[in-house]
Image 1 (spheres, rainbow, N blue to C red):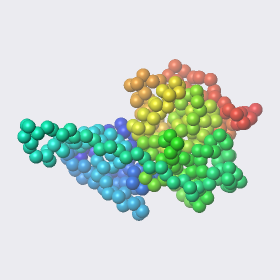
Image 2 (image 1 turned 90 degrees about the vertical axis):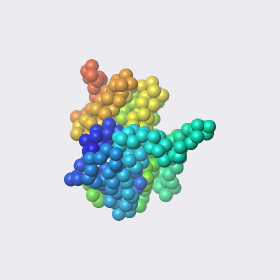
Image 3 (image 1 turned 90 degrees about the horizontal axis):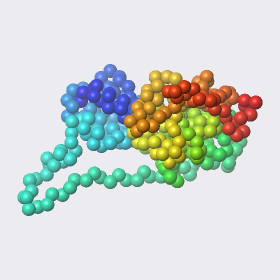
Image 4 (image 1 turned 60 degrees about the horizontal axis):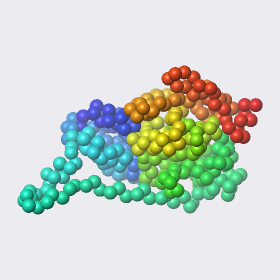
Length: 328
């Protein structure tokens, strides 16, 4: 298929990718949950009616993908994916049906019903209150995690990691682990097997407070302590369903939406993507910034953060509760 059209589509949908020679590498594997850029599809043709092919190169996976199957498994709208490839799913299916007499009523073609997301087993993890002196609890406390959020996390003693639970209602649909002492600085996190991070968000509810979108869980922790209803998107590549969940949270709370985007290329791109979606829905967006690297560093170092809008600068926000002592 035509590469530029694919790139434009991926940018619009917030799918993380990068070009590597004649291949396009995707950060996330929707089959095994890997976040290590292991999905490689070879770009060998400019035929917009044929998908490009490849697979996940992770040794534990090896799942084959086409550009169609990959995007659909990433939660992208099925009709939009087929349109990208110059296909109409309903008309293609009709082409395989025999001609029927006019006396026989036509059976409407319906989309398959999507199965509900299964609940993830977390029985092998420990609650923070069960092991309060564990290094994971101590690490999390130093990074600002308050006891109010303990129900949202667990301890994985085997990997020495903080486990951030992602809920849909009362059901855990996935999680992301943050290693407190990673063997490789570039491999700080691990996502649960099969968890489609492009479809879900991690929320730290703060009723009646402004919505603040964050890339990582500990940044969301800081946002919560600073007095926001925090939403984590597990990275800068926001999917359509994640943006829909952000807007839903704003509408449910009757509060504006802000973003704590990091000051790098990915952060600027994420802010631009979210602001464009909100613009078409007449929703204004503000940005939260700090003199520190990110909100979590600001929290730990006792520094304030500021809200910026297109009209100007708002008043600084200070940590709430016990953390307010940092600034005294």
